[in-house]
Length: 247
Ligand code: NAP
Image (cartoon, rainbow, N blue to C red; front, side, top):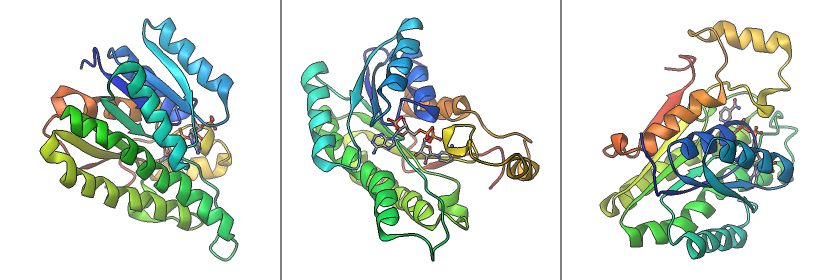
């Protein structure tokens, strides 16, 4: 799988799944923009790993939940590199709570980052990809978009929204040779799941046919396939990467 000469933006690439995706795409030859919102040191560490592996890229701070910041960031990328070939909408946050405890601000923050953030970046990128008549967009949703999860109503609603957004954009942009897909991870070992107690971790593990939690690299491999030439006839799909936890 080859991405030589391609320009990619990975949102939320300072840590976790986004970092693994940025590394994988850079190994495939893409120039990678490593987005983050507050953790500059971690983003720099991702960039260091990219360059240590012989790849190229730069860090790029903006808040995906901010329409204007997202638009400006994409304009700067295209001004600098002349194009944007690959957009990976990975940035996301969680803040678990039962419905009676979720404050309006909690709801808004989850929806603004996890769903509106995907809209903001797709909106800002689509015009360039349409002009290029080529592009690949991969949106990171979640297993809970399809299963639901007690304590994650806002997060699951945002992630389910990403599925509708993905399928609609696949229909809208297909004639311009732009493929839009989503990847739905199960339980992946990152900062987001680090607060699970050992007991909860064991309970989840017992439900997974492959008997382990996933790694960021498990997800990155699938994202890499979706942006490759080998996947050029795949669009509008939701690819589950969950060890068989939901099928
Ligand atoms: P993570 O380790 O917590 O990393 C989150 C990343 O998102 C960080 O790079 C963070 O940047 C960035 N981010 C957060 N808010 C942002 C904003 N407003 N603008 C720009 N960047 C922002 O998360 P992860 O586990 O790798 O998750 C990555 C994606 O996979 C998320 O969409 C998550 O919902 C999804 N997912 C994760 C799992 C799982 O089990 N881990 C399962 C299903 C789906 P800073 O470092 O600057 O804060």
